[in-house]
Structure formats: C-alpha cells, structure tokens
Amino acid sequence: MVDSERPRGLLRFATAGSVDDGKSTLVGRLLYDTKSVLADQIEAVQRASVDKGLTTPDLSLLVDGLRAEREQGITIDVAYRYFGTPTREFVLADTPGHVQYTRNTVTGASTAELAVLLVDARHGVVSQTRRHAAVLALLRVPRLVLAINKIDLVDYDQEAITAIAKDFAELARSLGFADEAVATIPVSALVGDNVAQRGDNTPWYEGPTLLDHLESVPVEGAGGHFAADAPFRLPVQYVIRPRTEELHDYRGYAGQVASGTVRAGDEVVVLPDGIRTTVTEVRTADGPLDSAGAGLSVTVLLDDDIDVSRGAMIAAADDPPQVTDEIDATLCWLAEKPLVPGARLLLKHGTRTTQVIVGALGSRLDPETVGYVDAPEQLAINDIARVSLRTADPLPVDSYARVRTTGGFLLIDPPTGNTLAAGLVGDPLALAPAAG
Image (cartoon, rainbow, N blue to C red; front, side):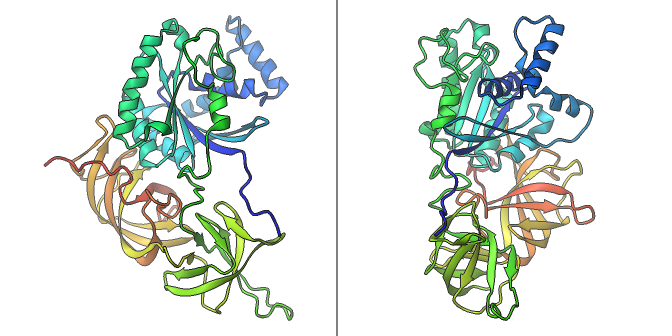
C-alpha cells in the first residue's frame, strides 16, 4: 500500500501589515537567515545597500522588486515564496500592505493555516491592523502571530510592547480567536532580534523566536484547510473510463480530497442527486491506498454503477453538506466595477460552475469598528458584506466556518471570465447584526 498521509512539515502562512511596518524586511530576514536566497542575490543586495550609504544589508531589497512593479500598475495579487529548514517547509503568501490591496489579503489568507500580522512598535494597533485582523478572522485562519516590529526604535521598552500585545489580544478575542491561537512575538527585522535568532536586547522575553514558532506550531487538526477531523468531501474533477477490453467495467472518479478522510468500505452519498453507495477502492497512479486525507489527489471507485459526472460531490453519507439553490453568503468584492442586486454572474464551487443571480445586499462589515453597518446600495472594491444568491443548479455546500474548502466559492464575470468576488457560505464572523 502507498503511504497516504499528507507530507509532514509543511506550513502555509500569510503575512499582512500596514505600509512601512517593515514586512519586506521581515520576509527578507526570514529568507536570509534560513539561507533561502542565492549568493548572487545577496551580493546584489549588499552592493545596493552600499550605494544607499548603509553599513548593513537592506534585506527588504530581496523582496521589494514586487513592490516597484505594483507602483508601476502591474497587477500582482500575492507573491508566493518558498523556503525551508531541516524541520519544516514553508509556503509564504506575501500580501501588500496598502489599504487598496485589502482584497489581496483575502487571496493570500484563503489557504493559510497561520498568519503573521505586523505592527510598528511605535504606533501599535492601527486601523489597517484591525482591517487585516477582521479579514483573517472572516477567512477562519486558525492561528495568528502578532509580530511587534521595530522594537529597536522604542529602545526595547517592555512596557510599551506589553501594552500593544494587550490591545491586540482584546481585538483578537472580539473576532473570535481563542487566546491559545494567538502568539505575540517582539522582533526587530532590521537587527534580527527574535526573528530566526534570539536577541540579547530582550532578556525579558521568554517566548520563542518567530522561526521557532513557525517550525513548532501545530498544523494538522488546527481547524485549517486540511483539518483531518472535518467530514469527507471529494469534488469530482474527472471520470476515468478506460474503455479497454480488460477494463470495460472500470469507472473511477478522480479529484482532490477537500476535507476529511476516505477509506474502502465507507458509505458515501453522491450529490446533488443524493444517491448512497459504498467506496470499494481508493487509489492513486502509484497503487491502492488504505486511506486518503485532505489535500491528496485520488481516484475513488464505488460499489454501484451510478451516473456521476464532473461537478458532482462525493461526501460522507452520515454527515453530508446541504444541497440548495439559495445561499446566504458573505462576499469579499474584488473588482473595480461595483456589484448591484440583480446582477447575473457565474458561481464556481469546487469543480462545478453554474449561473447565479445576486439578490438583496445585507449589512456591510466596517473593519474600522469590526462590526456590521447598514446594507449598501452596491458593493465597491474591497467591500465585505452579506448577500443572498440564487443559483441555477442546486449545489452541495457547507458553511465556511465548518469546512473552508467546500464553504468557499468564486463569482465570475461571464463575458471576461475574470474573478469578481470571493464568497463564503454563511457569516463566518458571526458578529452581532447592525443596530436598527
């Protein structure tokens, strides 16, 4: 049998923060200290730093090329960076800090199992901090790290740093984060204190360095994208029918396990039709598996010869998703063109795309106050609001708060195929409704 477990030691995380909080320097420091940059890149940074009159390398130059491209008007949603240590591999979604790029934070955090949120030790929690924290809570990112950066510029003042940590802890609780899901680490990305190496300037800090935390934080079972305890879901991407003399009866259903685990002998239901059957085999190109967990691409064979096509979903029979053509959702509007009620768009959920009509707009999230305000007449770019949708075909959906993968969807512009919105089934924040 082939080993079916998800590769261990892999953490997907995102970074977020306000402009000039030092995020580029922090990311550059992580790459530099983990020896994840090439020698010629380091030499180029050293030369550029000398040209700027600096006595130490400006590590932000390792990543600031993308920022220059953004300033030229080139659209880059998220920069993905890959690095590793002997303990763990990392996929870092580096998102821009400008307010107008808040929608990009949605993209970067949508598959993150942890987010590093930066604040400047001189300024503490600001409006963009609250905005990003609300987006991360909305997307149900399981764990947060508050990186209080530039502590060298406040003379490593423990009292000031403790006050920032307390302020953010109150914000995180209001957004539904448990205390144990939030870590606070004081760092100086410029000097290197507590990023990959413990700094001598903070003898009062007894916690881990940022890299230590990233290497040791639990991933599986944390409630994230690959939560093993979620119910089984497999959106069917492709039906395999070899039609050879040897395999004339073979019919396999291929796709990536969205959540949960599947084994031969499991009772499942094929949606949206609701036909119940039993799994007879789970396999990959390398052979059969004892079991397959979330994130693994597999082919499933079923006991009954039933009509299953691309866009169907195979799910746990004892805990299936809801099949409906009316969805109450939360939209993160990503497009320049505003959204108005009555718009006819396409909705992509899993491997299925169907037509959808936008109904009434509900209350809009105000990231400044972390609460909902009265419904707008239309949604503008970066707006996050409740909305009702009616689909042409019934879809098997979970609430996003329960299963991130099958609780999420995209709205697409029919003429261009451009993505207009990221949608979350239900209200993941579950905040109190707007007054009045």
